[in-house]
Amino acid sequence: MSKSALFSVRKHDPCPACGADLVIRSGKHGPFLGCVNYPTCDYVRPLKNQADGHIVKVLEGHACPQCGADKVLRQGRFGMFVGCSHYPECDYTETIDKPDETAIACPQCQNGKLVQRRSRYGKTFHSCDRYPDCQFAINATPVEGVCPHCQFPLLIEKKTAQGMKRLCASKRCGKLIAQDE
Image 1 (cartoon, rainbow, N blue to C red):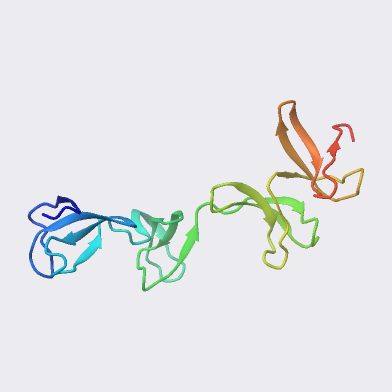
Image 2: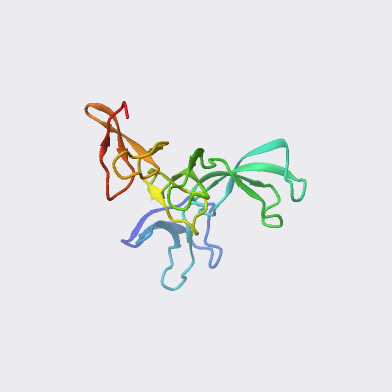
């Protein structure tokens, strides 16, 4: 066994290319399975099945609207989602964690509504539902109201050591709003 092999795999899992043993090796993207006869045989495969969308549970009684097959709960690289059991023939999917819509109008375009979204890092923010046409976004919780200082049509709530405070959502103003205003 070579120095770079971490340990060998069970005897009933031979290399499909040459029939030798497979060993777990470490690479720049993490551990993987490789043939013990490397470099003569260069067979490799992922250690785990890293394919997106493996089935967690079959949702019996819930039919796919596109083909009529059962829906399934799948685990993908961005979290859980519902999809068709006949994937890849049928590509129906639906998200589980749909954005929360507020009744607050977007202060930038006045046409859209603010929706709660989650960044790729897991942080919550609010943005216009007309994205990419309107790119308004804020990191704090939006509150209906008008700033008495600059007349901006949106306020935000921030948690401070003194409790919840309301501020103007405009980056230019950002002034504290008294609770009685």
